[in-house]
Length: 384
Image 1 (cartoon, rainbow, N blue to C red):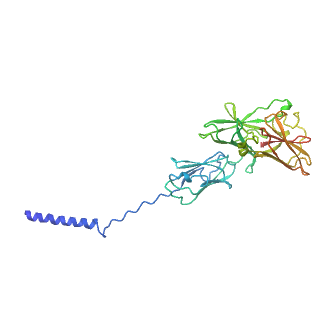
Image 2: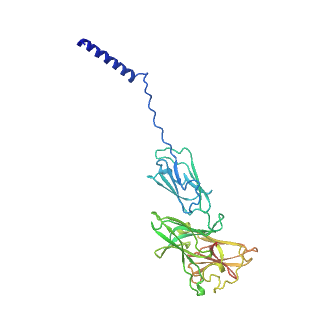
Image 3: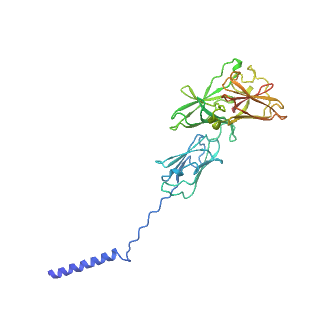
């Protein structure tokens, strides 16, 4: 090919290539589709423990909710995460930003043989994405070990520190004999031994019955712990509960006097009335001797304490009879550790209700005694 011809051929080929590039790279006839923005990822509950439908859940269980992405901590709270039975269960909510997990810790052990529903609404992701819909889940706690699903609380008391100036949780016993311990503000990462010390009639001269262990409760890094267990012995009981480490008593079920305002505001106490002649212990009979004496009738009765006052309720006791009430500040029920609270008279049906201010001492051994015969003492019963 001659040089001139070759030059013209190269120009022709280059022109075709340039035209093709212009046609495919610009203009309204382009075949390249515009790029759409990536849709925001949905935000939801990824998993929950206990899983929905789980049965035999321990009364000491916490609820853990894991989200599909990081959540806004401000929306992870007890308003947007609720546990109901059907009443709302009180508790605290914490959040782990690394695990995307919220943990609901009940303020007290969960009731046995009960269905609990977990509802999550209003929680948003860290980027502000809301949940498409609310989340619900349900589980069932372990059944009671005594009379079954009808178990109700029959004893509850605050746990006071050894110096009796602060309240560090509470404990309760239901009619199945299930003991629930909730401890707050204690020493972190510690195992506490729970002991029960039966009351006894110190004026009778008999030996004090020994205290015995009923369970343990472990605290976490924040010094809080929840534990449930069955009271180890059946029968009717009256006495004190104590929590100790290394043999040192640190918390007790005393109630404080009305002078300490912080205790008046935080303490609660209630117990059923037990016939003194059937309470385990030594000589708790309402008499100076260990003989049981004559037990007056009683259909039911309770003792409750709140905001500095203690209320006694009797149903079906001896009719039209004066009853005296007292409180013991120590386990021996005698003249040195017992003081009078007041008196009341039952009606013709043997019913009465009386409210008295708590005295200037401490204790949790309350008694109701008629003019004659054996009376009643605050405590609880454990079925066989």
